[in-house]
Image (tube, rainbow, N blue to C red; front, side, top):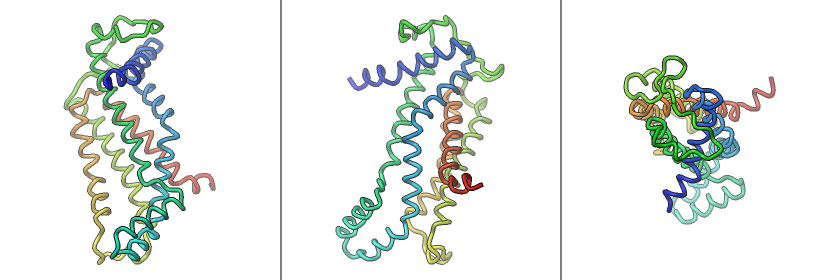
Length: 247
C-alpha cells in the first residue's frame, strides 16, 4: 500500500513532469534542471522556514546554555525549562528534519525515474494519457554528458557538488562561531559534543556526497548539484538578508 501510494503521488508524477518538459525541450539534462528548479520552488516555504529556525536556534544558544547550567543537576527540570523557553520563543528544534526527509523521498523517487528513463520502452505505461510519448529519450545532454553514466565520468560534477555542500555547512558554522558568547570562544575550553559533531559533518557530508555521487547516474548527480546550489543561494540570502537589503 505504501509503495503504491509513493508511486502514484511522487514517482509517477515526477516521471510525467520530466517527460512533459523533455517534449518541450528535448535535452534530458535541461529537463532535469527545470524539474529540480520546480521542486525547489515548491519546497521554498518549507526550506526557508527550516533555515530561519536554524538561525533562531543559533541566536538563542547562549540562553539555552544558561538554562542547562542552572539545572545541571536536575535533567527533568532542565528539559522542561528548555521546552518552555522554545515555546516562548516560538522555535521548533525539529523543524529542520522535515525538509531532509522530503528531499530523501524525492531523491529515491528520482532514482527510480532515471532507471525508468534508461529502460524507457518498458516505462511508457507510466505516462498519463495527456503526456505525449516522445518514443525515444536521448541520454546525451548538453552535447557531451551521458546522464545515465556512473563512475569517473561524474567526478568533476561530484567534486563541484561536494564543494558546494562544504560551503553551505561552512556558512552556517561561521555564523555559529560569530554568535558565540565571548567566554565560549576561549581556545582552551573543551568543545562540546554538538560542536565536535558539527565540525565532523562539515567534512564528512561532502566526502559522502563525492563517494555516493560517483555511484549515481550523472542525471541524479545533476539534480543533487542544482539542489545544493539552490540551497546555498537561499541560505546565503536568509542569513545575510539584513546586510543585503541595507545596501
